[in-house]
Length: 134
Image 1 (cartoon, rainbow, N blue to C red):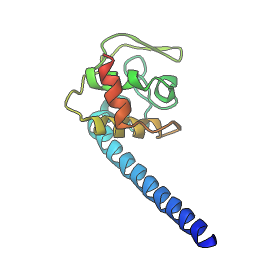
Image 2: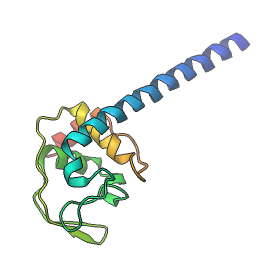
Image 3: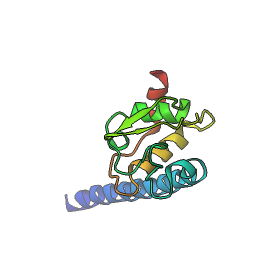
């Protein structure tokens, strides 16, 4: 019985290790995408540019539950004045239709877990479901 319990615990630990390792790789991939596509407008610290580009750090919309909205903004862009946490931002966000579903998931996972943000990771399935809602 102890051998069986040991095997089960070992398998769980191995699975957990690979899950953590995969999340770290996704964060690195997301960071690279952020640095090449998002940093110029949203800044290295995720603080955005006052009255122009919304901050991503500590923004309620970024760490909120409406992941589909975030996916659609990245995929299709956004060209409306944004009210976010009591401030307004007016710069349009360019669409990124060339990003693959896994890249959008990695990017959003990075953004939702960088700076002071602590939110759930975004899965490829969530990205795919969000694209269908458009």
